[in-house]
Length: 238
Ligand SMILES: Nc1ncnc2c1ncn2[C@@H]1O[C@H](COP(=O)(O)OP(=O)(O)OP(=O)(O)O)[C@@H](O)[C@H]1O
Image (cartoon, rainbow, N blue to C red; front, side, top):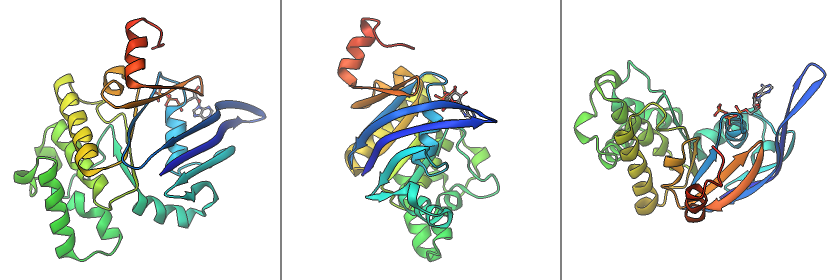
């Protein structure tokens, strides 16, 4: 589903090169939910940008649904991203002058889907994320947690191979954070959606079955249970 192979990345500033990721290898199977955990500066955003095809790696390969995305042209990538990858952002990134339903429909508008089908799929997804009565409101009329639910529905409408969530609860209070993570887990368990959740919060990572941990651009992989154990014994850095 998602295969990251021997991935390294350096940024060039003038003549100086800074290595940010070094020899990253992991795979995420279809139907998995994984937290990508790392402290500030560990390389999470860089890795996410590479996996989303927003930057080309210095070395290595990223396969999504069997396709090496680093080999694609800009145009191929734009189409591939729209159809195979879903995104959930910390700040929701909803369009304020479109209704909740229109926001969710938008990726299908870009695919040229018929209005009736768009509306049906958007309404079904909005029901699934608990917003059945809110479809004709505007984003500003919703709470932060509800806006994030809209963005989750939008990320699913093209039935992507994988959904990347970038600090999805970063703007939410603890109770709403737990509800949003509950929703992502429910969508994973009951609908088989593959999620990679990028976070610096152990509390979020602790909820997923598997944690991939980045430290100084390198991987420290562990499953959630042993990681929790390590946390208890103070072995995992913050
Ligand atoms: N364009 C760039 N040029 C040079 N160095 C960069 C660039 N972008 C990021 N870096 C460096 O790469 C390292 C990793 O940054 P990155 O943003 O990937 O970390 P992060 O784990 O996402 O951190 P945060 O949680 O604070 O966003 C940092 O040391 C950062 O200074």
